[in-house]
Length: 495
Image (cartoon, rainbow, N blue to C red; front, side, top):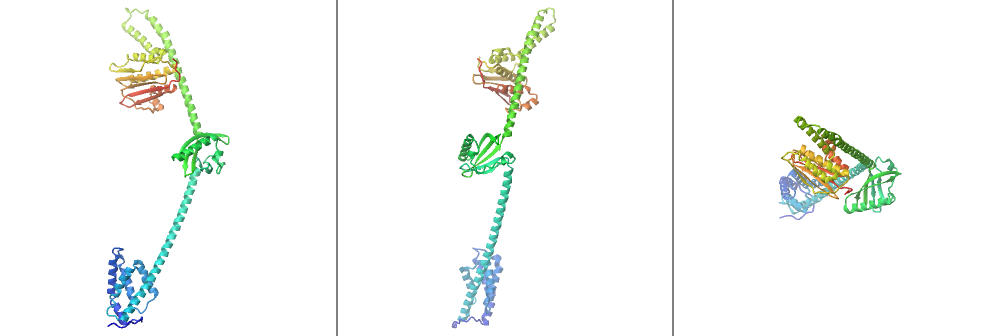
């Protein structure tokens, strides 16, 4: 029979001996219970030794007459590492410890045991809370330190990026302007290498007071379109800055919701260079035109001299030759010479060109039948026309067709040559197409390479086309034949 409860805290030596004897059993019981209970939450096998140490520390304090808060706090810190302080685990702990100790104890001893156990638990919880608080403060300090470092790193990165961007912007030769929706300039970069603009500061001014009215209208329309489409717009203009006339190209880009970013490039040097190139090209074309005109004039003069002088004298000489007594070889060579001179005269100045382009081409095709191979054929698919144009246009078109046909007959080894086209009031076009060996050329012909490869005839066709304001296309590939096309819109109809 159990004795009456005594609220004294004193423990006899038998009680302490009893606790120590059961320590191994208590440690093992609590260890296994905790490990099993935590399987589904957090496996604690790696902390097995710490669990046993906590159990031994609890048993050690329970067996003592008294303990200090520091000793209980030490256990609380170890418990904090396990994160096991909740009602369910406390109940498990109580059962593991007290179920083995309350056997054969008097009511007084049992009361003292329970009271000491719960007081110890309270002290341990104090140590646990204190440890957790220290850990939280330490972690908070680490977090604040990391935040401060991150903040400093971000600030340094921002300063670095701003410095780099400023260096990049300062080295950009283009003018950069940011304009708000009221037309005010909120940012201005004069552009590197623009000494005339460096001393001008338009920041804060309204764009309408800076540029001419007509340009302001164009700029406003482009800005509205940029915001509407979300795509940059390009305008090209020119005006005077400090009494110096300059050309500019502006790319207008939507910036943020209500601003416009304009990147303005001074293109004066480029425009002046292009103008110089155009002037040089025009001079070269004029020189080429004069050269070809001089060549045609010389051809005409030579043809006249051959016809009026040489051919006439040979014809007169023929009257004094007796066919019956003259050697046959002499007569054959004499007639062949006359025929070669007539051919030369014809090539120098086609006589039918005086009657128009169509008769001249038709006559030339009849002339060429004497020179093509018997197996080759020439098809002429051009409607008859009596229209007349400027003599230079007719001459150059004829020469282009003549050269294209000559190349097809002499070099292409073609079996079929087709001449197509139309002589109209609004447009003249011809194409000469063959099924010969072809050439490694396309429409993007480099005249310098063409001349370097001794293709003077092809280069001459392009030059003649340019002189009369026409376009010449060459579509050819090795083994697939050649097609030469000339297109022209005549400026003036003669008849």
